Amino acid sequence: MKYLKQFFNAKAVAVKHSLVTKSVVDSPCFIEQTEQPLPVLQRFVPIRGLDTRTVKLLPHKTLHYAAGDTLFLIHQATSSVWYLFEGTLTMLPDGAAPFEIQADSLRAHLPINSGKKFGASGVAQSYVKILEVSADLIAHWTSQSKQEEEYVVIQDLELPEQINESLFFAKFAKAYRENKLTLPTLPDVALKLKQAMAKEIDIATAARIIQVDPAITGSLIQIANSPLYSPISPVTNCHDAVTRLGLNATRSLVLGISLKQLFKSNNPKLMKAMQSLWKKSLYLSSLSFVLAQQTHDVNPEDALLAGLISDIGIIPLLYFAERQGEDDIDFTLLEETIPLLRISIYTTFRKFWHDAA
Image (tube, rainbow, N blue to C red; front, top):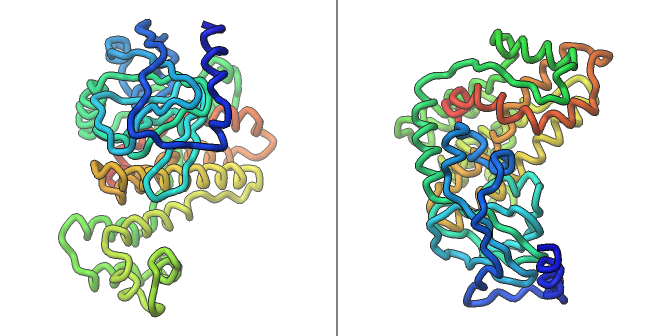
């Protein structure tokens, strides 16, 4: 396998600097039917959210591609879910700048395709492995999600082995089990707008709800006057801003502005961690929005919201850390542990944030 990989890497001549989108896709140079170990499969979303038995029974295979190969084309139909398992993949969306996905990055833990079509063309920058999972994954995840939405149960939080002896994380796990963590709450404006838009409301009603909060109103007016909306004349009030943005975009923006207010801390080191989480959420939400626009299978505004709240589950951990005092926190360990705990914490609060969004 080592020599096979080296051979196909030789095809990488000038690939990085001259991407050419083909009209046909390349076939895999090798298809590995051997099942991947459970810990490998559980790297990926939403596989990691399924029970162990379901994951073990999930049909999958690994596709090997050489550098320079075109793996798929934009709008190409697919009956499976793809993940980048190894290597670097360049995505070529229609009408937007190309971007790279690297294995083991935050983005690589998410599916390459959304829905039944690819939202961009994909070209291998290096020798690439793709984990192709049966579309049964979506059915399993949808079924499990519907069941979980009926209730929220505080489950036992299993700490990773490397932090089992940490007093700080032991205290956090205890607070988690006893449901004593501080759960961030959205401003009233975001909640009231969400509740109102569950019914059919007009722009005037939405504006009346929003303009109670001067900070959110000011941000909406600023966005409505940005080049993104190609304004011919500036807007100066909330009603005109909502008119220009549209109700769905306004709802997403109000939630986004409200969420930004939650990513804050009086501790400089924790504030740095908060800002890093927020930037990742913004990146993911932007990417989700663009992919949803391309696939037409998901409402882009809903995709944007999903990206924004993707890391909301880790905020209770950082709030808890702030209350403990700086002397009790190993910031290096905290930073290393966040990726290990974010899914467990988020699962507990998922229904709350689903309802809020």
